[in-house]
Image (cartoon, rainbow, N blue to C red; front, side):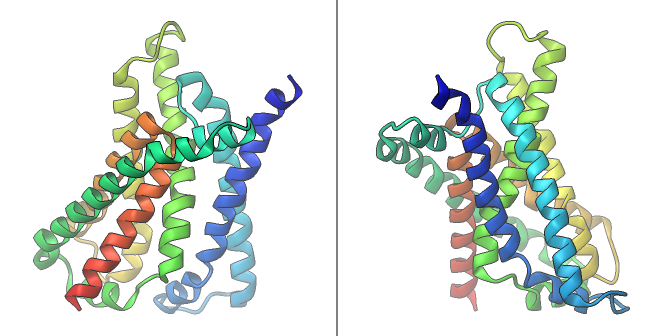
Length: 257
């Protein structure tokens, strides 16, 4: 009984540690983003990085806690981490997510690159020029994009929205119906896209409807795939798929250069 009681806390610590690694990996982006600002920041760069890390850590911790509360109530979870903590056969659990993660990540990458090609001629020239030079390090894409973003968006927010709709439409009664997951997935995918707008605004001297549409839709495309994998296979599958998506995109970009 004691091990079972401690499982949520241990799961939360593991999830936070993984997400925090992603937060640290994003620190090199701050100087690049500050270089795009018309004015220098009022505080030293190292202090800005410390404050950014603290802020990101608090948000990460809050959303992981939110997911720990909501996810079990609506049959969402982290089955591999839970299996590890309960001394189950983790290798079989890992094997069950590899294929859907690779397929989902690859499909997402192909759709994202196809959407980029479709929208490229409609985007501001300043955005195209800055986006070409502003390339996050590969490890930031994998660790922050792959892990931290999934914990924030899927584990925290999607779990919350599924729980919220289940609570008010089904009154917490019976098995969770599919529409709760579908609605929450669409909402969080859109929020995932919206969350990328601040960076896009730094990369472009003008914010056009086409740019807004591209940023929201382009990111939401994979968001929907990741949300479906989280629903069906657990947060670890969504994380691996997100990493695969970045790897395939980087490979396509390398081949095109």
